[in-house]
Each structure stands twice: as C-alpha cells, then as structure tokens.
Amino acid sequence: MTKLVRDLMHQDVISCPPEATLGQAAALIAQHRVHGIIVADSLDQPLGILSDFDLLAGEWLSVDAQSLEAMRGMTAGELMSAPAVTIDAGAPASEAGRQMLRDRIHRLVVLERGRPVGMISPSDFIAGLVEGPQSRRKVADVMSRGLVVCREGTSMSDAARAMTERRSRSVVVVDRQGKPLGVITGIDVLAACADGCGEQTVDAFMHPPLTIHPEASLQSAADRMIQHHVHRLVVVEEQDPASMPLGLISTSDIVLGMAHSESVWQV
Picture 1 (cartoon, helix red, strand yellow):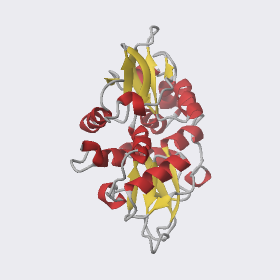
Picture 2: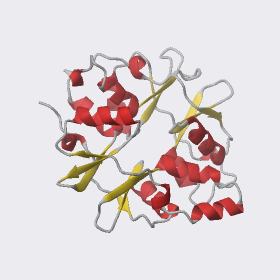
Picture 3: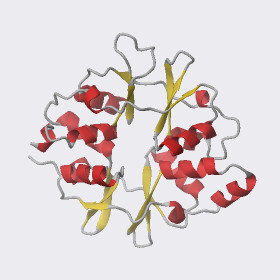
Picture 4: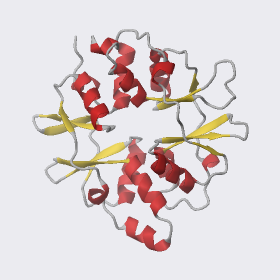
C-alpha cells in the first residue's frame, strides 16, 4: 500500500512568531532537538522556515561587536527561508521525497485542510525504510564521498564558518593521522554558541562518531540512525576503521536512494 505523507511526518508543530529573536529561535531548536521550526503568523499560517543552518550563518558572521549587535537585532522573520514549502498530508510520501530533492530543501510543512499539522524531513523517511521491504542497495551506493573535516582544537566559530561555506550540515573531527574522533553538527554549534563561541573548541562539544562500512545495507544504516537518534553516520573501511573516513551517509542520502528508479519505493 502506498505510504502517505501523514504516515511518515513528524507531528510536533514547533513554531515561533516572525518577531522572535534569533536567540529565542535557537533556544527552541536546541530545546526540541530539531533542525528547523516554522515561522508562523498570529493565525498559525506558515510564513517560512528557520533552520539550524540559517542560524549558523548568523553565528560566524558575528565577527565583531558591531556585527554581533546587528545579528542580535535580527528576527526570525528576517532570516527565515520564505515562503514555507508545503505539502498535503494525503499526498504520497514519494512525492514529498521528490519535491525535497528537486528543490534541494530539507523539510516541508505538512498541511491538512490548510492548517499545519506537522513537518516531514529526510529523517522521517528512514523510519519508513525500516518498516518497508528490505532494500538490496548498499551504503556505498548513496553515501557522500566529500566531507568537511577539521582537527581537534579548531574553534567552534571556525567550524560554523566551514559548514556555511561548504553548505555542509556537519564536520568530522580527526586526529593527525586522519582517525575520526567525533562529529560536530549544527545543533552542537547552536548549543555551544548561544552566548557567543568565544574560545570554545570542537573537542569540547563533539559527539563520538557512529560508523558504518560501505558494504553495509541501507537497512542497517537506517536501523543505526534510528537507534541512536542521529542524522548521519561516518563511513569507514571495515578492515581499518581508524583510517581517514571514506565519507558520510545521511538521512538525505537515503532519501536520494529511495528516489532511485530501482528502489523498492518506486515500484
């Protein structure tokens, strides 16, 4: 039976008014451990979406007291991505996946009778992948082979700058031999830099890398992401996991795999 958007969507609607400060929006994102919130008007109509990635730009652009003061004066309505891209709760889930891939966006506001009832993002698709038919495709088929890395001791503001400039949602922290030590995500930057990054470094905020090898199935990658509540895994050589990572696999990569013409989702 065809899965619908309502079958996969995240039903918690987390929103803020357009006049909310960036600090208030960051607090909501960090509190609820989400990657984006809806910016809505007084009638709860979605105006746009503010993501952790949007807030990253605000963090590293605040290079001095004057620019920091200017960024603190900005509101969610000024920084949000608008208009909010929406989809009906009764639409096929595959349509949502194709729309995210086509428009290169990470979340859609789900509407029912014109009212927001949830959001759907790539991470919501992996639960459906676990419940659905077994996939024969491997991690190596969809993983991203380019990744942003830094050494331990790198400042959090430099990590935020690298994420923004490279359009990456994470940085892998490695030692001098290339061994993966941890991962920094947008959520980590928000938590560390709520009041300014100062001299804080990535090794104080990184979380241990969860790894997988390239020959593992997408099923096992999805299982691991769900079990540990993460959006990405570091891909390493099975025989030499302490060597330089081969790449990353994220929820977005899995959605791309699901959109493939040979995917079980496209039958």
